[in-house]
Length: 85
Image (cartoon, rainbow, N blue to C red; front, side):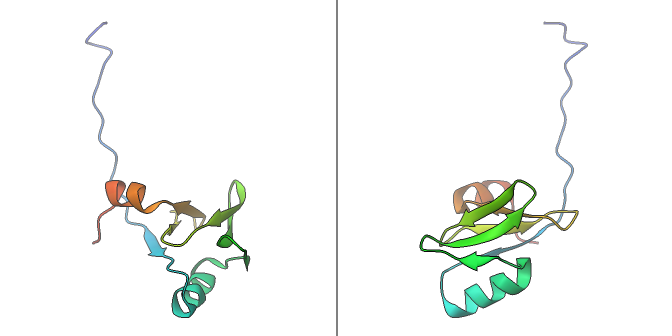
């Protein structure tokens, strides 16, 4: 491999807003206010994302992206990628 072609890059730090859903009245109310969640289902809550409607489960995080879009994120992935500021 040509070493001159290979470079190392670091991801730019981006501050995001996120909240974790715990399936209680206060958490559910806050989630609906935060991301305009669509509806409760038997298995969780549906949210609108750029990929369409996605279901989140108890303990999942909902991330607000830099352009105002929302994404679900499993707790283990969230904790690997993000730290509280």
